[in-house]
Image (cartoon, rainbow, N blue to C red; front, top):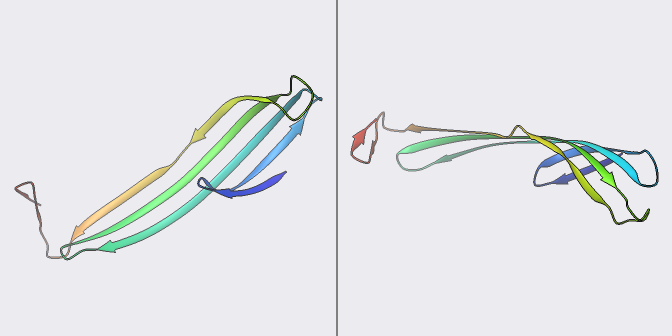
Length: 97
């Protein structure tokens, strides 16, 4: 079992060794970030949600530390950004919203 932190968030990995040549890893990591920015005419709110699950199969052909890995990853990353004008309307590319 391992805990980790990185660009995909904070996660947990489970490692299963079936033999000296085969192993399997299951992992999940997640991270949330909310941020707001205001300019002179627009207020932006952003939400980032990282969710990544992995299932990996490891093959150790020489029964040492060298190994080859194959597997799948499910990436459920979501980014939402909302911009709201501070004056009630704004013009973008000649169109008023």
